[in-house]
Structure formats: structure tokens, C-alpha cells
Figure 1 (cartoon, rainbow, N blue to C red):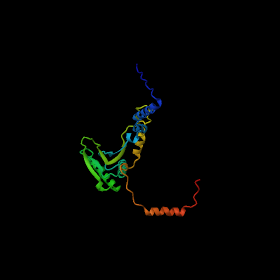
Figure 2: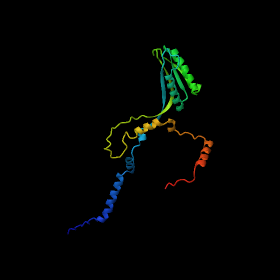
Figure 3: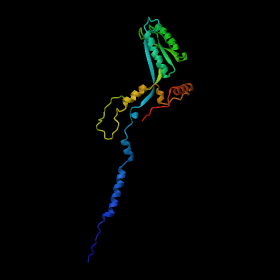
Figure 4: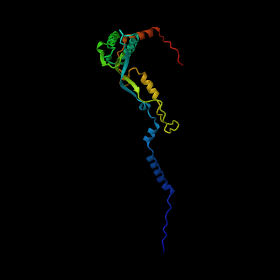
Length: 230
């Protein structure tokens, strides 16, 4: 007599927790919190278009004719503007580079003497004025005098106006490549002292006299009956 083996039908109530657990585990394996966070945060425009502080040379050239007896009014104005930039930059050495061996060498030397005197009149220390010469025998009759000093500039090397990507087709909501470029360039141009981007300035001493004057003025002309802001 043959034996019939009966198989029990699996209970759905027992298998359901196992299925749900497997789905949860697989979901956790495919979900990456770090990926989600990085994908949702837009790229920083300061990283794409950084402001770079670098050394630069400020230069002004002056044409000198061989019959000049001294510095002209235009050359004086150019020199004064150069001296003003030199003082604001905090540079140490102002260089005057004169032509040597040219047909206007004597005239350039006379103009150079006037430049040195002008710088002294503008309170540039004589130890900060450096006079040098360059060979200008092949520069003709109007070899130039160069004023120069080394300074620190803040610039953005990125070229603005680059529109390579389609702004409409952006599913990650990131900043486009040109975003912030113009703002960074404008900020770099407005900075008076680029060294402030590297390290802050030290605090100056308190002007006690000015502080007392301000307090006394407020006490004498101020009133305790302030208008209501509500």
C-alpha cells in the first residue's frame, strides 16, 4: 500500500515578515545617505571661481624726447598717480629705470632727477627709491623711463561668460558653471588691500579722546524721550 505524503501549504502570515525584512534590507543597501547629501548640495562658486592673491608689478612708462630739459606737466601727473598707488599698496621699493646708451640719455637723466625730487616731496623715503638703468642703444630717440613697484593683487583667473551647459536640463539643482564669476571678479576689484583676504589686520588702540567727545556730544544734544517704534 503506497503512502501518500501531504505537503503543507506555506502560511502567508509567516512568510510576509521575511519578505518585508528582505525588502527593507535591500532598500538600505541601495540607499546612500552620503550620495543623497552630496547630490542635493550645489557646488560652491568660491571653489569654481576662487579669488587668487598673487604678486604683480605696477608699471608706468614715460616717453622722453632728447630735447627735454626736465619733467613735463603730463609726466608729473603720471608720476603723482603712480606714487599714490605705491603708498596705498604698502610696497617698499619704488624703481626708476632710466635708458642708457640712447640718444635721449641726457634728457632722461634730467627727468629722472626731477622724479626723485618729486618722490621726496611726496614723502617717499629716499631709501625706498631705487634708480637703475637699462641698455637702450637700439630704442631710438625716445627711449622711455619706467616707474615700477611690486605689489599684491587679488584676481580671478576664471573667464566669465562661459555657457557650456543647458540650464534647463539640470536634475540635481546645482549651480551652473558661470554662477558667481562676475561677483567674484567685482569683489576682487573692490578690495583695497588683498592681504586682508589672507590674514586680518590687528586691532588699533582705542582713541579715548574721540570716544569721550562722542559720549559728551550725545549727552548734551541727545534726549531720553525716544519716539516709540511701535
